Image (cartoon, rainbow, N blue to C red; front, side, top):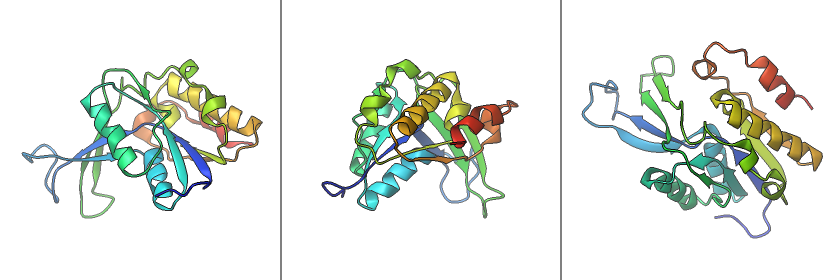
Length: 193
């Protein structure tokens, strides 16, 4: 539970629905899939909330029962959801086939065209979102998801820096999401001060 007057952190990124077979079953050989909510920045928000830090999460999810469930899961963990936008038609998904170790684990992303990938950067008022924030956190995954998320992240970082709010950026490179594009020209300006 967050404490009144606790520092406020804002995180920004895509909330994802993870689907995995139980135990060490193969992804498409199992008759069942277990669901989990995740995403790098959502995980940071939940972790901070568990430590008593007030944390607001900024993302975009579809206005449907799946988006509702994602928001409810964040609220249940104590994460602020005031700045979550609703729109688009689908939730970003990823499928994880567990392995005995990280090398044998298989991850398949299904994020193209998600509500977050189609985010309009002009729809976010970063001055309002970041008002009173003591820290802003994002990851290098976000700009890989499309021009809208990349522009929104650049706007957020610029606004945070302009108001003196510290910024952390987990570079978190996912080759499959960049699809042969060079991330350096996008990430370097975000990572440099």
